[in-house]
Length: 414
Picture 1 (cartoon, helix red, strand yellow):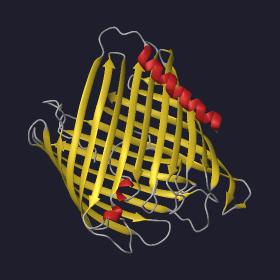
Picture 2 (cartoon, helix red, strand yellow):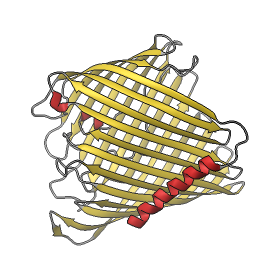
Picture 3 (cartoon, helix red, strand yellow):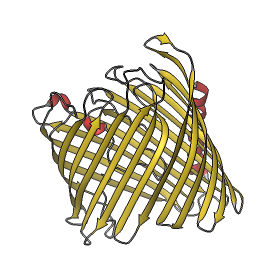
Picture 4 (tube, helix red, strand yellow):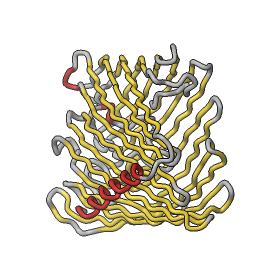
């Protein structure tokens, strides 16, 4: 796995060099777009538990800056971010996090190269759990999503994903994707353990119609937790991508994956086993003049911070609507069902279910300032104990000095 890790880092470095080193046809366009959000909220179950529930008001500050460089054939974007939450009368559940996302793309007459990276160092309390934010595109699950009881533990997380596509003929392309995930925790406890995951895929893309293409892809992944069973997964995918226009697209994917499990549980070695899982997905994204709709349903084999692999069923939903030039509304949902692979975890570990729904508005006061209000409902059924529920309301003031005069009504990722 050390060799695999080195290969991914090298691929990311090479990709970044290629993005930046090609000759320039004109002066590069640089942008610096800061964003500051100050918010107050109230949560009736801060730690999302059924015992010793904490209800508290909180103040939140989020500061980020988008650094953008682009030319006609390439673009590179980096966004550092810092966030903090302070709870009235409950300083023991205060939290903070630092984040960095990197997104670059370069295209040529016959190829496309893109590189995505994400890093985070954050406290694991309720706001660490999944939200309705659409952090990745159709058919791609957000990396590092883990369901576990929030605790005063810090997670350091890193993810890299280089991808390359080469046009072989006018109708046929080859694609290559690599992924590497590394998660470490300030202490091994409360259900968390350090882990590494390496994966990728090789596919053949055939343009079947003017608006659709079919892809046959072979995939593989290796999951290595510090405590728990390793899981080597390999499979095959058949995917149809439909692009009706630049703003209307959908996909359908049927797949199967086989996972080989080995290692030990509770310091006791157990025989190696294998299991086969049906995976896949379906989703669509439509963007109209006043309305945006995103819906995605996936089933994958994924690693978790608890030291075992799971079959994950996931639904992501986002609907945004502009009512007036200054007022827009949104609603979103996230539902996750994690089912541990057979014999991948201790017999006491059962399936986990998590659901979140949000609704709110964004009102542009003036070009640089907007007011955002939202209500969230969360329901979490952990692998041990009864389900917990939480209600939270938030009101935020956002300052974006470089916000375009005719920019989108919705800027919140919710």
